[in-house]
Length: 99
Image (tube, rainbow, N blue to C red; front, side, top):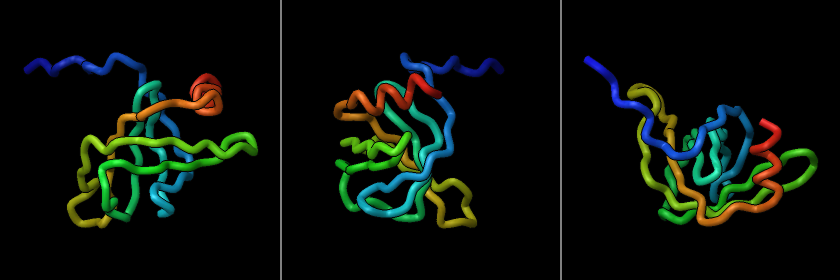
């Protein structure tokens, strides 16, 4: 059986970067020009979220919209969350270029 090709327009870049989503601990798993995937133990209360992380002594703040949530492993409390970005910043684009 043939698997479907990845339909994403933008290349995803794997990373393991500490972040905060709505002030709660998270880890960025992959990022792209238009979205990101992160892991967290905290279920967000809203679809619109603020994501903050540091890179090269700069704070990068992003506004995102949650597209999907799934449990990483059925026996754990870890969640994977896929988001689209409402807008990007020059600092975020620099982060992408360096990875």
